[in-house]
Length: 126
Image 1: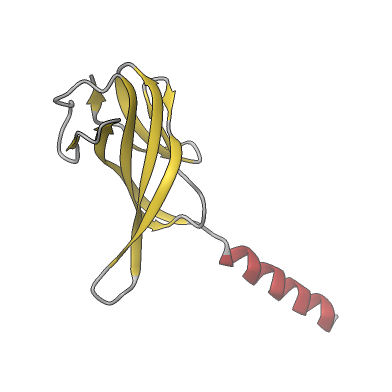
Image 2 (image 1 turned 90 degrees about the horizontal axis):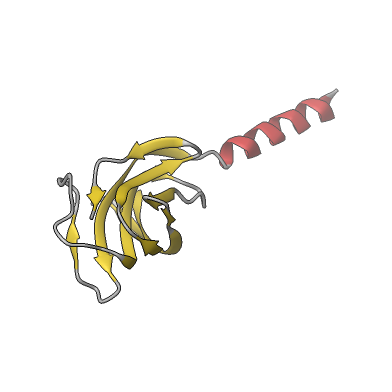
């Protein structure tokens, strides 16, 4: 009986150790293949055209635990490139900035989602 209780406690703590804690996610920037881009945090529509290959930056608040968001521009699916952690003044990790590469972009909204939950879809890309 003691072994069964111990096994239950260990398995439940391991399950909670790998839990994601995503509070929010935003698209913060878009860049073309040459590195020219713009900040899209407070925009509804991009100023430039981003046809072909482009890159998007996404800020994720919380702990994603190796889970990557699904980032799309119209029909183009973003491919994960890199990540950079963001810390506050007390050296506590508060989020990550992730870079995604998109191929064959024509136009459409930037959509950021985790496990089919939509977090951001306000910016239209020309």
